[in-house]
Structure formats: C-alpha cells, structure tokens
Length: 147
Image 1 (cartoon, helix red, strand yellow):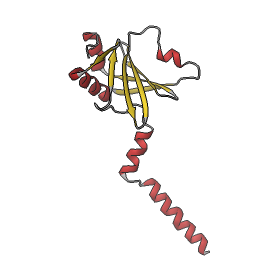
Image 2 (cartoon, rainbow, N blue to C red; image 1 turned 90 degrees about the horizontal axis):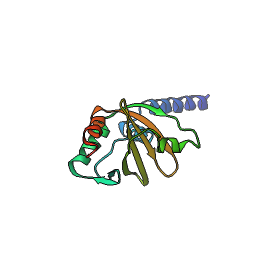
Image 3 (cartoon, rainbow, N blue to C red; image 1 turned 120 degrees about the vertical axis):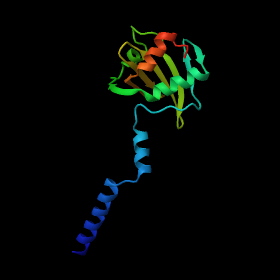
C-alpha cells in the first residue's frame, strides 16, 4: 500500500515536470531538432559563383535568410543525395559555410520563381527544404546576386 502511494506521487511529479518544462530546456530541445536554424554573422562564409560575398550584402543575405518562411521539407532517399546537391535546371547556388556547435555545415541556396530550395549538408547527412522569401528571390534576380 505504501509503495503504491509513493509510486503514484512519483508518477504525478514526473507528469508535472514533463508537461511544465522551464523555458531553457524547451528552447534547447527546439534548437536541437530545428531544420531551418537562424544564422549569425559570426564565422560564416558566403560565396556565389566562387566569389566571396562580404560587407552589407552578406549582412542583408543573412537577415533575409533568417526572415524566410519555412514551406516544407523534402525527403531524401538514400542514394539520391546528388539530385538535390546538383539539380539539373537551376542557377548557380549561393553557398553558405557555417558551424553549429562542432559541426561544419554547408548550405546551398537554389533560387526558383516560387521558392528558394535549401540543401543542408554536414558530414553525415543531407537535408533539403523549401523557403518562401520574396527578398531573397528578388536580390538574386535583380543583382545577379551581388549580395
């Protein structure tokens, strides 16, 4: 009888703890599994057609990327990674090299009329998703990406 009461109290405390997590652990969990993570200006290299992008153009590109709206994730089946990394009907991508913790991450941004496709590549895996950003699309179109 005593063990039943103690186990019910422990299960109740566990339920309250899991359903009412503090903000810090919740934010950490969200960042850990986030697909479209925000970029900061630190330790980022942006290139377009092999030329580095610097200064105000770099800051604007990072801001527009962070403000873009996530549309959907594309599922990549094993063995089809190259189809996403080098699409047939696409302009040259904007390449963003960054770090997330200890991981080196490379982002490829491909522009289309109705969306921006992002291919996120690290050592072990490739993730692809689409973004909606009028400013990113117009910046690449008007300037030929002098960004």
